[in-house]
Length: 242
Image 1 (cartoon, one colour):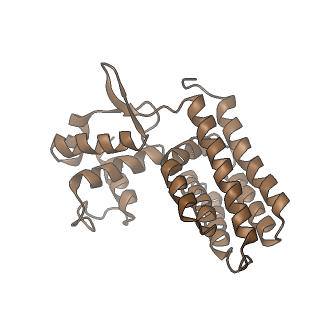
Image 2 (cartoon, one colour):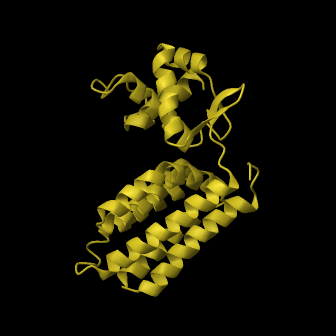
């Protein structure tokens, strides 16, 4: 990564305005966590693509820090499933296998369909409760109109997390969090294959419309179709391991 790219990733990782100092807002966070946040953001937005090597010495020099927190950050990302070790070659950004895609998307389908059933079975289900999903759709459409693919991917992940949160089920949310980073990584790769990011936003708007209409079967159909189509899009052009 070049120095400008590193600085941009620092800003993204902490939600700061571009050009803000590296230490701003980080005073109470261990250095290893800051480094992990920078690298995680770069992996999830595609700045560090699958297979990209993570060389401790180079990263430490770019960030002007010692190698120890970099090593610890890479270990954290490995535990999260975003980084893998390759014999005799060191660490690299994980290259999701076709099995990874199939397993993550099948689990997403189970969790999100369960969430939909919970939401529509709730006594207070309705337009007001779904306002958060509408707001995400608005933001996604704005990002898409600006051709901001990274922004679209971030809002895409936020939409599905919000759907899970609206189910008001702690264990469901725990399960979602367990696969969330891997899901977001794969979702970003999928979105990068789309020629028109506006279609991503349109798909999500239809799901909200079905929820608002209290149409369980249509919502389940749309959610299942959205997830299955996303997995198939990646698998059709798959170049990673099986």
